[in-house]
Structures are given as C-alpha cells and as structure tokens.
Length: 259
Image (tube, rainbow, N blue to C red; front, side, top):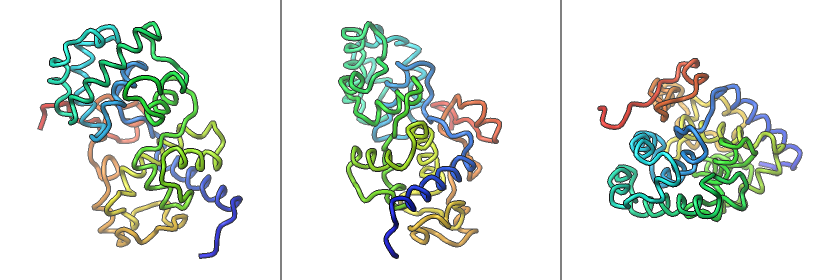
C-alpha cells in the first residue's frame, strides 16, 4: 500500500470520526457519576476492570462516603471491603483515600479543573485527567485507553505505542473541539465491534475506511454474533445511562448482586 500523505490521513481520520458519530450518536462516558469527585474516583477504580463492575460497586461507596472529606477520613479496611469486586482493591483503596486527602488538603475539597493539578493527585495520570476534564468540566482531551490505542493503530493514524505519543499524534488530526467526543466514539467502537481478539469486520460500518479490514471475522452473519452491548442486544455498562442512550434502545446494566 502506497504511503498516505498527511492531508489524506487527516481526511480519512475525520471521515471515520463522522461515520462513528452517526453510528454512536449517544456515545458517552460509561462510568456512572453525578459530580467531578465521583467521576475521578470511578475512573481510578476502572483500571484493570470493566466500567460495569465499577458502576455496580460505586453506589455503595458514594452512599457511605459522599464527599472527599468523608472518604479522606474513611477506615481503609471498610473501603477495601466495598472495593473488593473491582480487583486490586488494596491499591485502589490507597489511591482513592489518598486522592481524597489531597483534594481536602490542597484544593479545598473540590476537584480541580486543570490538567497540571489533576495529575498531582494519587492514582491520577493523564488518561484519568482527560476523562475528568472532558466529561466533568467540558474541557477537550483525548482519552488514550486500551481500546483507543488498539483502534488508532489499526486505522494507521499513528505507529506510536506510548499513550502520550498517541495522544499527541491523534491530536494533530482533529480540531481540539472534537477531542472528547472522538474519544467516546473510538472507545464505543472498540467495545462493541472492533474487539481486541476477534474484531467483527463483517459487521463494521467503517470497514471500507479501515486498513486492517480482514483481521477479524468478515462473514456478516458470523460477525453479527460477535457484537457486544446494545449492538448485540445486550445491556450497556451504566446503571444510570444518559437518556439519549435509552432513547436509542440501549439498556441499563444490572445492579451488583443481580444474576
């Protein structure tokens, strides 16, 4: 395949994003949250587990510790017990209590709305910071999670492997105002259709724009069986999803403890 000029790459990348916006008009962060504090805690807890598992766990956590002050003063063993289902619960307990203490000590109990402040909090890296900035503060950011990394490399938007280099490379292809929704579109697509082990190529609406078409199942009927979440008729990850998602036929996830 002949090499693509930067202009052609920008054109193709933006077309993919436009198509994804039509496929997922209801794309949203898949963590349940009501305020910036809940979002930063939920995002830290989502490492090495599913958003669904976090959403099933956080209602009990926030019922008992609704504010940074409450969580900062919490007994670690009690928090560990609540967070156990999310895996790595001791490390996560340390992070969320630590970040709550830092919020109280350094930011008056409020989650800061600046990247340089957020990344100083225990357990908060650039990825978490951009989730919070984009979704709690409306400030543009690119969230480079495992899905985003996988898809942008499949689409040959970048050859980079390090998250900060991927973020920088992809950032040059889109206006800043697109960054937050771009992240949601790509992550939604990675979870529903373009899976890590077996992408559903034969059911993928952007197959004609994809250099990696054929890496997965190309037979349309077999590919359809690989679809996840609402594309496959299954519930999504949020217990309390946005109305637009429900209006589009998405189903809320079951609470913890239900079969």
